[in-house]
Length: 112
Image 1 (cartoon, rainbow, N blue to C red):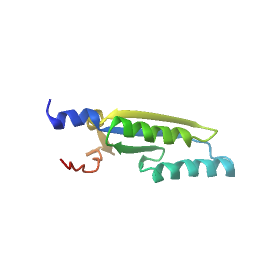
Image 2: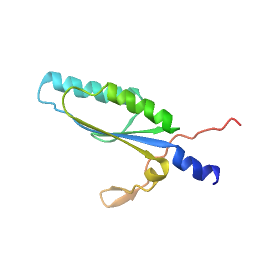
Image 3: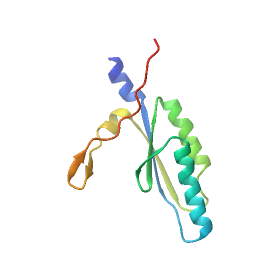
Image 4: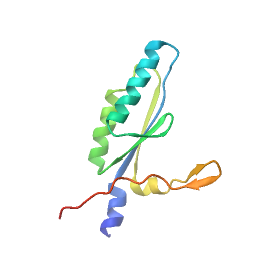
């Protein structure tokens, strides 16, 4: 198996889906804190309540999943999905009826 093909299954993406209540001031503050924690941990907004993050390995993905679990507010729904780069590459994204290219992960340099 070539190195590129192997990396497609080794590199991971973590997707976080959430639906948090915002009726009270405290709920809005908790939702905002959760969102800011995701951004501070390197997640990017994909849609309003879907954030994603590129991870170099399965072990690195588990670290970020654990951080998300540690920051889940007391109310609301949060889903975390971890998929391989190969699976992420199969996603089709549309803006209205025009297909757009999915985001790519950062360029990884190999030192040796």
